[in-house]
Amino acid sequence: MDFGDFERLNFRLPGPTPLPPAVREAMRRPMIHHRGSLLKRFYTDLLAKLREIHRTEHDVLVWPGSGSAGWEAAIVNLLSPGDAVLATVIGDFGDRWAKAATRLGLDVRRLDRPWGEAVNVNQLTEALANNPDVKAVFLTHNETSTAVTNPLRELAEVVRAHGALVLVDAVSSAAALPLEMDAWELDVVISGSQKAWMCPPGLVIAAFGPRCWDAYEASRYPRFFWDIKSARDMASQGMTPTTPPLTSLYALDAATDLILGEGLEDVWARHAHLGRKTREGVGDLGFSLLADPAHASDSVTAVHVPEGFTSRRIIDHMVERHGVLMQGGQGPMVEAVFRIGHMGHCDDEAIDDVLAGLAAARDELGLPTASRAAVGAA
Ligand SMILES: *Cc1c(COP(=O)(O)O)cnc(C)c1O
Image (cartoon, rainbow, N blue to C red):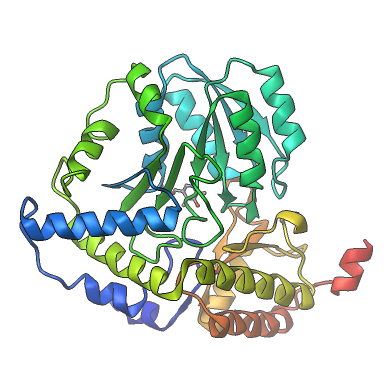
């Protein structure tokens, strides 16, 4: 098999994302004793860096798993079967989280918004007024399937006022978009290594705030692997309850050094710049975007596929002719949009290359795109 093709691609999926050289290099480190002093120093230092990036003084824990495992970890530690929760759903990931909760026996109330839109404060306030018994609210910070960012800080405030727990899926926002766990009083923030963390898939990173521990004591779910108390107890000694995924942790260690070396707020600013540049660039080429412009994501962009085409056709052409790998939509939008990832290891040059490829593809495929002025007028 020739993986070299992928070495040469401008790899612009919204996860997994490209690995910086320092992250790849870190994965060459040797195995170490998982109960030894080196591991304890290494893991203690890694957790401190993760707290800094989450802007929290509370607990950040890491397990092997993909991002979705974080949904389950939050549920089985903080809730009980039959509890009412409010799942806000603005796209495919929010929908999956709601379905996971139903599968685990929660009484799931939903606040659905049309795909491309965010949840607003009034809608959430009304939903909570209609569902006074909900114990937790699920918020997707950045809905990767539609490239929409929810106004998390404002929404969390509404949930806090109601007294429910704020559970946040930050899988495609942590380490990319402004996120202040303590200042915004978020109870749980989950993410996955393969998005803006610039690491291979394989780790779920989850932060738990101070209110979680009473909820933990009250929770009646059985749990073993995802138990946050045993993970916290071991973390306080610089260890994990089960064998740690060492190579993945080496990658995360190098990535957190890159993030903190660049400066967290500079990382956020770079994403804001790349998001704006991508949206303006595709807009200037005459494409239209799925996201409400007021809530467009700075970590991924979703572009409407022009009438008479499929995302598959455009994506195949872009990879074969221009060496740019993009992704289609999710769920019912698989063929209706294509998505450009710009989270994590991404710069101006990578986006210029995507835009040049799209400009050529527009002419080569005869894509019937309107000018931006015409789209605005329609
Ligand atoms: C990628 C992603 C997930 C988790 O996906 P996994 O395949 O389980 O890692 C969850 N939520 C959002 C918003 C995502 O972007």
